Structure formats: C-alpha cells, structure tokens
Length: 349
Image (cartoon, rainbow, N blue to C red):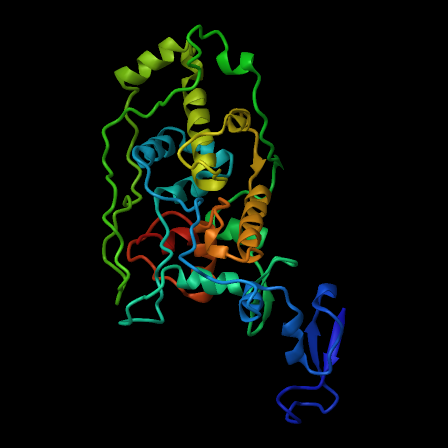
C-alpha cells in the first residue's frame, strides 16, 4: 500500500500539489501522520538493541565465511583449466573462479587512520538495519535488498536452470562396484602452492598492494599424475569418464565450501554428490535461489536472536561482503585486473 505524506522539505517543490510517496509493507503497522514514526514499527535488530531485548556481547561468528583450506585453491585452478569449457557451458565458470579468493570482513574505508576497535563493524551495522520480515535493509533512501540478479551480476551465479535439490544417494550408488567402498576420495594430490595467510591486521590506511590469495592466472593443465591415474584405476573409472568424475568430485566440494556451506565447513555432504553428477552431465542448475535463501535464513537467524553474536548458523556471508562493497563502497578494490565479475574486485584481506 502507498501512504501519501506532505513533502518533508517544505513548500519548495515544483508543484504545491506534489506529495511524497512512501512504500510501506503491511507488517509495518498502522499509518502515521509523520513518516518518521514508521521506523518504530520495523522489526530490526537495531530496534531490539535500543529496547534492551538484544545485545552484542562479543564478535559475530559466522561459520559459513569462505576461508583458506589447504589444497582447495590448487584443486580449483586445475578444475578451471582442465574443465573450463564444461564449466562455461554450465554458466558457473566465473562463480567457481570467485572461489579462488577470500573476502575481507574488516575493511572500512571511512575510518582511514582510526584503529578498528570492534571486528565485524560493517556487518554488525548491516545486521542491525536488516528487517527479517521483508528481507530488506533499511537505509536513508528506503528499503533495499539482496536480489537474485545481484548474485548473477556480482558473481555470475546462474539464475536459470532446473531447481537445486540435494538427495542422499543410496548405498548402492555410493559404493558402486568398489569392494572397498572408496567411491569418493580426494583427487587433489598436487604440490601445495598456497599456505595459510598470517593473522589479519585491523589497522588499514590504504589497500594493500598484495594479498595471500592466488593471482587468478589459470595455467594450462598438466597430464593426469601417477597418483590420480592410480585412483581412477582403483575406482574402475573408464578413460572416457575421467574428466566427468573428476569434475563431479570437485563440484561437490565447491558447493559445500563456497556456495552452500554446512555446519561442518571441512566436510562434504553426501547429498551434493547427485546434483554435482547431474551438473557434470550438462544439467544447468539454478544456484541463485538456494544461495539467496541460505543468505536470508542466515541473516534472519542472527537478527532475531537476543544474543546475535552467539548464533552459529552457517551461510555464505562472503556474498554479503561483496554486495556491501559494490553498493556501499565499504571495501577497497584490488589493484590487479581479474577475469571474474564484480565480486572478485573486492577480494583480499
């Protein structure tokens, strides 16, 4: 419903008959004579904190934030090189590429030389202005939200295709003909190039000229190593199916680590095996819907809790960082050129 108010700036509009149109949702309570009263009815964490119903008692902990994992970046580079054409056909090449980088949650360009006293200051402010009833952010210009199209524009997440669904495979599908029940094993046995980054510093005056992320250069892939050939042989994988099995294993890992993280970020859910296999068989999947739902659920779990810092619901908050950086300029942009979409511009520490 649209509520009509007199202009807040007084009688200086082009026409004395022009009034201000303010979009209101039904949950925002009864209409008021003054638009400033509307905010009292909004269900936000900030309002709960003011009323004494909620409190930040520590730093916000999010288990779904994408972090360095030993061996993952080497595997991702190899998958992008070896299976690049198939990933492009599936419309996920760039969002896979985006997982080559970490995304900073501490940057605050407005503070310059001021030491950041509280980690997650930007995310905390975002959560305090988030309305869980409409999945919107309250700003000085109105309500805005993270949309499906934002995920596509920021990271190349596909918004078309069949619906995403996770199904736990049967024991027969999991074991196949492998007598030792080792149908799924790590394919990545290459030399480790990337090592854990040192602890992040809170004080930043300018954007660092280098990070501990990969440079984003995708080299020509090598031939299958002896270890990988032995694994294919052990699993009785036909030569013509090697790339397909390899990519399915990687996509299952990628889904659990970067797109839809679970409570245990260091494990791969068996329920992703089937959807990963379908994707390697040229089945395009709409990943934007489950991704956005995961973001909404994670944010809402935080904002409705009386102790938001104590919530540990996993969700891919790194996409929220990219959204904030793109629309609110909260993060520094990187200095080098990357082939990815907007999200990669705000990667680094």
